[in-house]
Image 1: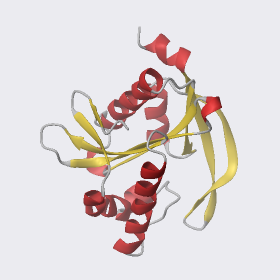
Image 2: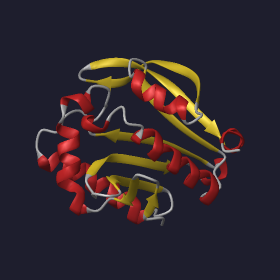
Image 3: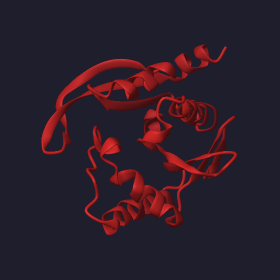
Image 4: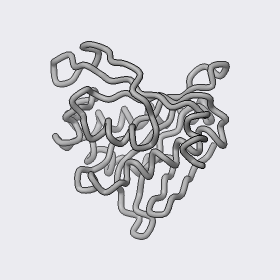
Length: 184
């Protein structure tokens, strides 16, 4: 399993149980919950159960489930999370998601982390396709997905359960050939 990825400003390390407090704080913020289906955790135990599920997936299928802690390379301060989850092997596809602390929004860090995860997916895992989704009103996340070369392929109506309401979702994807073209 690839436990660490490095960019100019970031370090992505596979999460451990030591990251629980940072993850709980991230999940507890109303700003990061705005377009998220998890909801704000009732308490630390709820976050702990989510993190334990991620850790179990990573242990059971170490080359299929990657959830990384995003940290500032210089300070090691926690910035957020990014994940890549592979689908059935014969389809050579994966889904990606990310979530950053609001103080780090608008600084290009999500774009930088996502570019590195795409590189890892296409160059090291030899994927054919990587997908992502975002609530249609989540303009900032849509911009990040488009900046890295993902194309909006469509929308699903009322598919995301967010704070007791059904919300529409945009579907994005990038193919290996698209990614290679953007890296020339």
